[in-house]
Length: 125
Image (cartoon, rainbow, N blue to C red; front, side, top):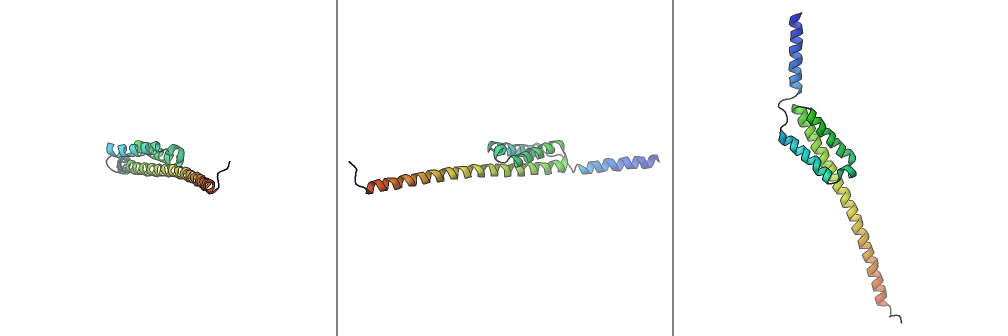
């Protein structure tokens, strides 16, 4: 009976070791994920892509609690979500800028048309 309990404990310990999936993620991997999340935040992702930004933060936080391959996987997720959030934030900013430029172009076109109309008319006295 004592032998079987010892075997179960040994197997459990081995399985727990295997579940961690190898050596811990290194500080460079964490730094890259941190930087990706910071870049997304700087791009305005918290406002423009909050769901993606929150996923990136959650994955980074989970990576800090995990170890081995699980930590690496969570770091990859964090970087992926952060990149997507940053891209969406930049795209939204570019859409707004394009709309603003289109309005300015329309205003200039109307003003040019007014000037052409005035130039074609005789001066009023």
